[in-house]
Length: 273
Image (cartoon, rainbow, N blue to C red; front, side, top):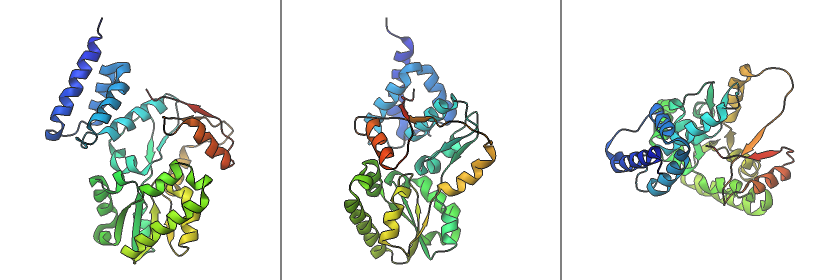
């Protein structure tokens, strides 16, 4: 017998795709309601719609949906706080995400960088630096000095970390980082500070410092650690390592990178429902 919830969810999804260009974005509460209505089929519908619509309908808030699914999943472990340790969702959706515990994000430390630099490069993935949310964020942070801030697509550098090249092919990585900075500074010679506004980029810090030692680097994670510290407690415990994987980035490769970094941490593959 056909599941009426699945039929209804498919019909709802088709309707959403059809009218998405003409209506306001659904908010967090609506997305959660749709997830509950679809039940266990929601992840299938979500990723099917993502494959069909991300190019044709980029306004559909898939990032928000993924963030909500992740927060709900992690809340099942009863943490004291959740850190959305990625710049892109922190800038684009963090204000819309709610959970049973405090939720923190990492955002480009633009004000701190402007305080010591003539011009600042905010390095991030393309989806972040080209988003309207990023333009709004930079305007709010920089104010009248926004012309001194440059949002820069650093996706090619992020790929060096995701692929493991930064560990397994150091000479190639050094050349890529150096060429990237040469091109950036040729276009904007006034830049003398950069925010590493992708979770991956701090892993390339040594390469940045080797290529351009005069460039001031700012890591967004440093401030958020101070804000989370009051929620921690003294004592002992254990670290639970959870990792998602796909055919391009299997968990085994992630474990290999941890080994190369000297990190002894057992990782458990999970599927976010």
